[in-house]
Length: 66
Image (cartoon, rainbow, N blue to C red):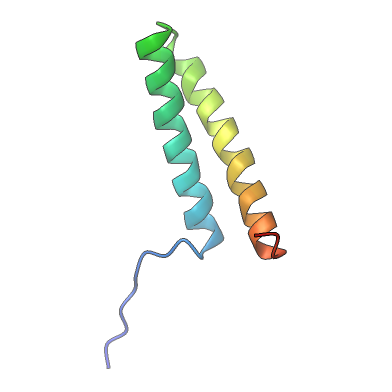
């Protein structure tokens, strides 16, 4: 039997990593395109926002809040 591995967001590390990547892309795009901001600050803000959002969503999901 071959065991297949799949990409699932049930894994907390994959969920948080995906969340951080999405936040970095969105915040960087908005700041550089609309506000002519610096890319380094946007990546830092995106990382912080993604980590906070990812861990909060995982905690709420784990405790059956939604």
